[in-house]
Structures are given as C-alpha cells and as structure tokens.
Length: 288
Ligand code: GUN
Image (tube, rainbow, N blue to C red; front, top):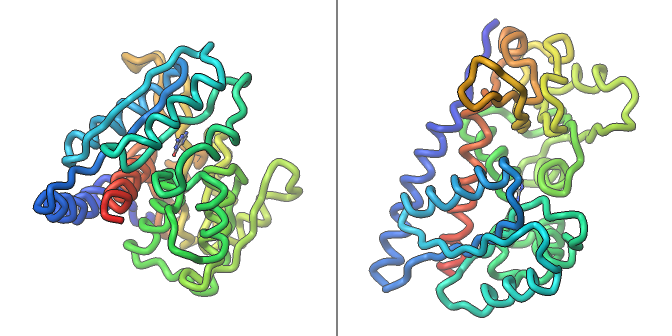
C-alpha cells in the first residue's frame, strides 16, 4: 500500500482563500487585522518562523508590527513590549515566539498577553477554555493538525489516536482536542517515560508524532492503513544542501508511506498549516 499524501500546502491555500473573504469583509468596515510579533534573540529556526509569519501576513492583507529584541533583554523590558501591544488598537493579535532565553520566565510572559489578543492560544485563560470546550483561541499547530485530519476525510470517532510528545504547544493541546466530543477519538499520550512505544504506535489508527526526534517513528511501528501526522520539523546536517541542513520529520517518511493509509510530508505537511491557523486566529481576533 502507498499512502495518500496529505498536502498541507494545498489545504493551506484552500483555507487562505476563505481568510481572504473575511479580510475583504472587514476592509468594508474599515478594519485591517494586525498582528504584533515579538522575537527575542537570533535562534535561526525562530528567525525563520517569524519571517515566514510576517510574510504570510503581508500576503493576506494583515498588518504586522514587530519587536526584535536582543537575547540579553530583561524580563521587565520584554513585559513592557507585551503591554505596548496589549494597549495598541492596531494590534488584534500578539505572538511571542518561543522558546525564550532561559533567564526569562516564559509562563509569566505568556500570561501577560491579553487573552482576547492571544492568537497563539497559549495563555492560561485560553487553555482553560479549550479544556472546557468553550469558544477560545486554539493553538495554531494542533488546530492545523485537526484541519488536516478533518479535510482528509479520516474517521476520528472512536479512532485509537496515539500522540507521541507532550509539549505545551502541540502534544497536550492535541490530547484535549482529539478527545473532545466534536472529534471523539480515544487518546493515548506517549512520552520519554513510555515503555514499549512501538506497541502503542502499532495500535494507532491515527498516529501523531510531535516529539522533535528526527526519524524516530519507523515503518514497523505503524499500523497498516493508519493516518500518520508528522509534526516534527528537525534540522539535520546535509552537505548537499546550500543551507547545510535539510528538514526532517519525526517519521521515517520514505518507509512509512509504504505502510500508512495517509501521511503528511515534511516539509509541506503540518508546517504551512501552523501559519495559516495563525492568520485565521488573527482575523478572528479582529472580528470580535
Ligand atoms: N515556537 C514553536 N512553535 C511556536 C508557535 O506556534 N508559536 C510560538 N509563539 N512560538 C512557537
């Protein structure tokens, strides 16, 4: 069996067409959505993510405002930038790119973001609402994963879903969303202390890899016909590439696609969806 490739670029472009319609109707009311981006330090992956997010805003009629701050900035100075965006009427959504340097209390900075501008869905208020199933901003990568599964027509009701990874940004929100009444999957979360990971994975109708370990999910860990979603975006050295690296997912893609029923590639799977969901959340914030 060769898996159906879930094309994140195509799904993203379909959703961006829907976003264009919403941006156009806001424009008729004199509203232009705005995203405030805060980047601390020069981690190459974070710089590349932020640049991609700002480019996507420009292409989709969303204004972006930014603070690019040195890695040594104090927590108080960073908090004052968050406060400026909180008070700025042009800024509907605020994104603080993670991770932050270790001398800064990440949770304190996130909690300072106004919940109605928290387009990443990371504040305690939005996470609490998500757990309760209330209307809220849902974190972008998990929301993108859900859209990919839904638009691929994969059955989620009662599906054995195994999530490999328990980060605050991806694994934990997915655990809540996949087990919601609306999705109705049966969820198992595996992590670094899980014994016999392969046995859990082999039982999965839907397998979501979000551990940040390149190629860790091998073909023999996949149930034939399963839906495999690869959230990993790992930079691995590659002397053939001009950049000196290439992107590799958490799944051993070439072998896995011969076993799975559906699979997302890296790049071109979940990645484009994260940015698209950020645009959708920013438009939602501007519409409230
Ligand atoms: N770092 C990695 N992914 C994300 C994300 O979705 N949002 C933010 N703010 N930081 C990230």
